Amino acid sequence: MLKMKAIKLHSRFFNDHGFILNPSQNVFEKAFPNGKQVISIQIIEYSNEKYIEYHLGVRINEVEELIARYLPTTSAYDEQSITLAQTPDKLGSTYSKKIKISKVEDLSKLCKSIETFFLETGFYWLDKMIDPIKLEQEFLHHNEVPFEDYSLVEVAFRSTALSKIYNPSDYPELRKAFLEKINSLELTPFIIASFLQFLNYLDKLNLEAA
Image 1: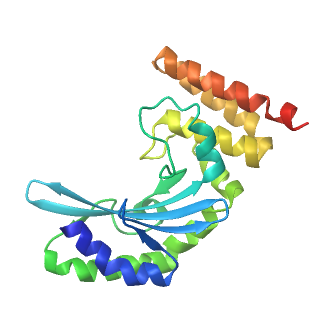
Image 2: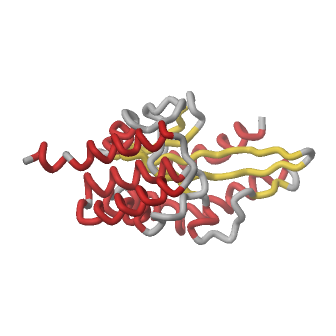
Image 3: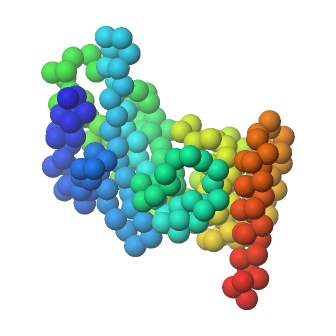
């Protein structure tokens, strides 16, 4: 299996930088006090063509545990949910999101090249994003444009949670922007009601803390 071959080729490199393979999910993880960093490798096949994708993610436990109670989704929001994930092309890499594998024999060379990206950019971004305030700023700068792998609804929940918990001065702006955006879209009453319920909870956090 091509994915397992790529994982095996990367194992020593990621292990040397503190990332351990989670065999149940086939992703590399590195824990920090508030959550974990995650690197996943995906193989996509179209007809006779094969592509490899890398996703770099950060999970903030407090945010994920909070939104799991309110986010209107049928997915299981458990310890595997990620607060934000990006692909190398979004972080300045010259690689496209989907990197074509011309020949299976070239996979080893491609993996080595990607490891250079992690040394120069990827690990730095992951370490930067474990700071919830810096992660919140990533969402703030995208408050009307969802990240590629996230729906607007998921961005709205995560962004407002991050700002309220870690950088409350941004919360009113983000609350207003996302509420207006969600209200302007043709979303189901259940989604809108879930977000309003979530905002109501966040609005009261300061009162409860006081």
